[in-house]
Amino acid sequence: MHDDSDIDRAGRAKRGSPFLTTDQAAAYLKISPKSLKRLRRDGKGPAFRRHTRMVQYHIDDLDAWSRDSGARDSRS
Image (tube, rainbow, N blue to C red; front, side, top):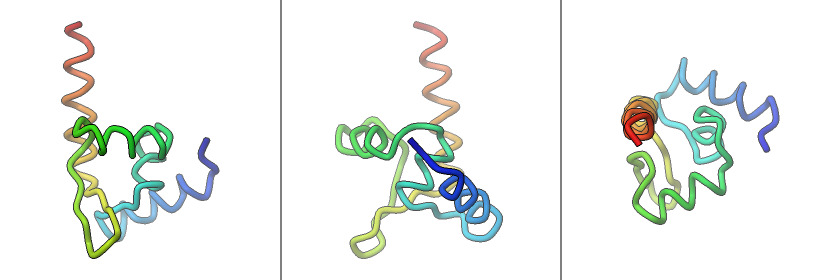
């Protein structure tokens, strides 16, 4: 699924820039990039931004989405 370099890059990005690429965001959330893209397409994933053609995710949005979706799942 993810190699250590994706996770390392996500960690470095979190310390430096708050914006992550799709691959980095997926590694941060511990899901596949394909799943994250599907969630984005379906409007069910974390908030994202398009900087020109590049999709980027802010760390705070990933954390908020993870908390919110975890809370919903626990009530099911």
